[in-house]
Image (cartoon, rainbow, N blue to C red):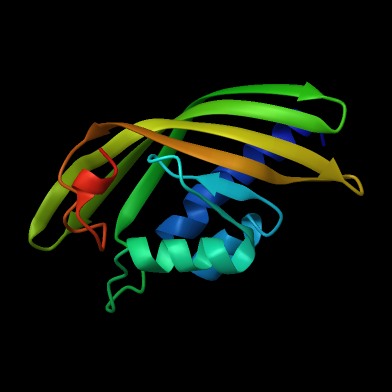
Length: 147
């Protein structure tokens, strides 16, 4: 498989896992990586990333998911031997029985990747939200913290 396709699959895998509410698998994607939050703070490695997502993401008991759909688009991937970078856009939709389907946040991911033992993995993800909707049903903290 071409490196660009492997990297694209990692980016899309993140969206699938977060929408499934599988925070442990999300954290596993970042076992050797850091996430840079909108305020510039960073967490690195499985335990820190898992704690961050558990502290931030509302999981609904009836579905065991956040009731979201993350759409990732406009991928620009550049590969240089065993290093790569990607820039993409994200839009997150949410719907609940008392919350009509709507876009709740949109922005950009700036990712770095590394190839280790022939396999691509995340090295860093920078999350840059740019447009904000009603995040009250998605986040476990006040959304003003990320604006």
